[in-house]
Image 1: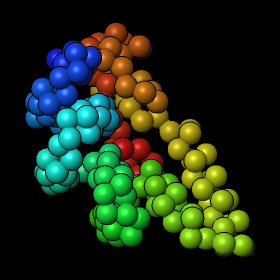
Image 2: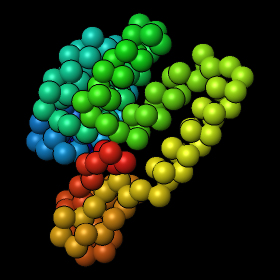
Image 3: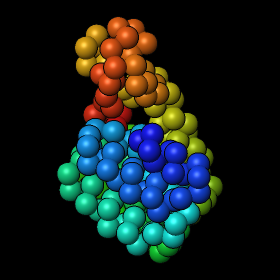
Length: 171
Ligand SMILES: [Zn+2]
């Protein structure tokens, strides 16, 4: 993870992407942390085709929502809204997720008009509130809940014990 960041700071984005890929292979639990910088490095080194293959492969082995959201954004930019929404809805049937629902509402919003749009705005607001109260990470030693990832648990001070929580309202 650190190696990736160092390469990225030096502008060596292909090398950074490789380092981030190794970090995913070392511990797949950290996909939610690694995907944003990894995707940034893919984009800057123009490896978006490889990015799709790598994330499709992660999708097979990892059951959280992060790779689904990342692929949805990739399809949105490359193939347009329709392909992206088709992919997202097919994935949401297999892995129900509030964050996925949020992405679906955002992607569908533009097509809504009048009363339907008003109702959609309420739904969007409620979904957002539901996510705001959720801890996304938990310490496997002491049970400390956190909204962001910490390498060291702020409560029991152990290292690498904070993991993403998997569930409908989390990862
Ligand atoms: Zn702890």
